[in-house]
Length: 438
Ligand code: HAX
Image (tube, rainbow, N blue to C red; front, side):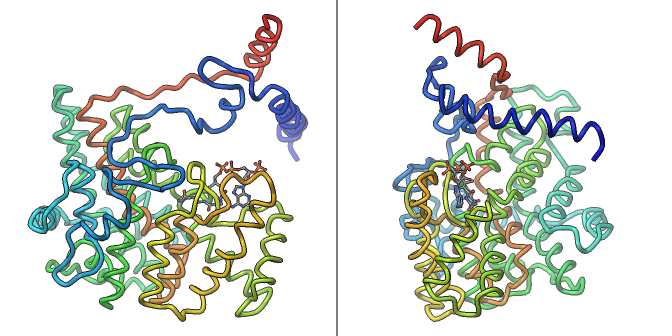
């Protein structure tokens, strides 16, 4: 170990223990409107963002412009005879706070088709990456490569008046949404399918065309993609991907820069990457225990995961305190189309076994499953086995919400974001002063 690293460990590890103790003793001391604990708690519970597109209730789950997930599945336009909502319609709803008609959705589809050509240099950039580059890294790089096309960056360079920012932002947002499925499909096919690509099919809707370019043309898979791209789109403003888009965008970085940054956050295992981690965790459990683990064996494996100091992926949430309605929507889909699927049944058994164990730790605030606990099993059912790719699907969907929000950030002229931070020394002195004056 080099001297610097050794010295860092000698300083940091004891300080981390000291700060934990300090928190135990002083966490509930007020600091302005908040407490000392709030400063260490990742800003949870602190209202510090305006986000128009959706609102999360801890017990009920997400509402997009006032609509729950079951309501969206019922009310958003569908393809004729279809059963799942069209995600383009959700974008319309989030952007305008108005339920679209089917014609409104057709209008978006026609517009996005005209914008959908991905510049050739984006594919060349992706081709230059080693094939073992994680798909989320490729996705972020692909988005950055497209930044050459930013209408906002050009308009800013040319001296646009600030009251007009929303206009070139709209162009970038729609160009991105129109192109992301092809970039994502390109990454999938180059990484896993021998670089054999599938041309877009212009008569299909956004989600079905994406499924088609990935190489999955079953009607049921089209339905799954429509549902998947709808339910992953938004989760109010404070989650890492939404917040990052807002934060980076607040510096007037254009939508490509802001969205690429947000995808780097989605690629974290405590956020979107949890969808691949769930499947990896189940496969590791099966490798260790056998193909159809009993509920007792699942319980033992959960205990072992906790003892090893790891998280049980797909469980817990920073805000939610009940089963995620996005989990339930996927469970309902699975009950309709694949009730006997082996992996799906393992997911359902984990749902029965995990919550009491997690609750029993006494520290996990939400023992219930989140969206990522179920999504992988549905994709695997249709043969999409390459679970390292799952977070890219999440990213394509998340673009709808965070980019609709970015439109509102520009339209409302929301300012640069810059929360105040303090040092531990500052905090210790402030706590001492409070105690002295008490
Ligand atoms: N397994 C084991 N431990 C868990 C846990 C889980 N599923 N969920 C929380 N904990 C632990 C935390 O690590 C923390 O431990 P320490 O005090 O030792 O640091 C403690 O319980 C308290 O955490 P919390 O307040 O309940 O949860 P946070 O708000 O800090 O974190 C997370 C929320 C979602 C990050 C957390 O529940 C977690 O790590 N879950 C597993 C990963 C996951 O599924 N992430 C996806 C979340 C949904 C999402 O964003 N999807 O994209």
